[in-house]
Image 1: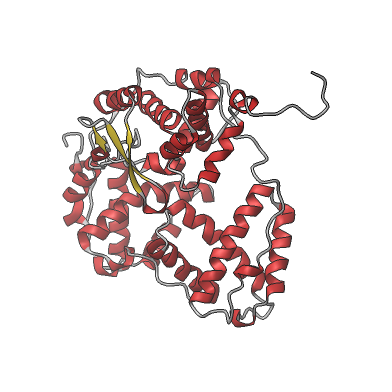
Image 2 (image 1 turned 90 degrees about the horizontal axis):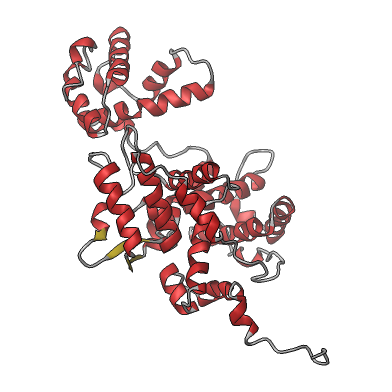
Length: 405
């Protein structure tokens, strides 16, 4: 707290009563110096005073007017500034109870209203995670955009199976096979939702054509041992960020967690006495996995020597303020940066999940055991890894009839 000197930043009314509380909030987020954000607070308060606005009159529209009056070199510069200023809005919303900073008002356009309702359905009734919701909403928006006539009126009751087929055909032409298959899956979900809500007269999910492909044709793409060692060796474990990144990579490679599952890990999820880890998986599933020694050691070193003291209970947090839990995208970025440092082609975090499954299979684990660790509901999904163990497959392959012996 001693690093903050509010007397050097003059915040006038109407925000002056909130200065001390805002300083404490910034300290909880890990800011060592709050001069920049205190300056934004002072500037905002002075602008409100000139405009004759009280705190209760600080709406989203007024905030937009304040931001628009600032000088930015580019739109990206404005986005970075708004992102940096977000702790001020969060604090004012909590401390002053401003309704303006709550959830945005429901969209007034027909397409936006449908998408907003679909988002609540996916979140509350399907229990989907944020990243999956965004992917499903994207397909819903694309489909509705294709269904809006030139007049701009959206009448889903007149939608036909031919329109569904036409949309899938156009999308499949520009997408790879895997992306096209994912699009059809998400579209079927959206069409079932439209019928459930009475927006279509019949369920059109059955009209969605399947994308032709050889089932389980490709091998899972796993990293070899030298590549894994290069990833881990790229982390400078003398620094806090290196300790964090190393622990994340070890968790991904050894346990096969998804990026979102790593991001959702909480301090209380690690049971050091029992030696296991609670994992919050897809579909709101909660399961426990054994905690291997090397994984536990990597996490412990990060917690003891690298993790900053902050109010956030996430295991893996940002190294710089605001010190909050990493997002799934942040976990993926850790893998990308490790690839760059290690001189490897960039791969996504999910590639390390394939690597974990492949390593377990080659170490002698059965497909059932791999499926349990990967937490895969269907044995058909796990069966793709059978193609990796070529030595086991060669034992059951029969010679071609008539082939030379």
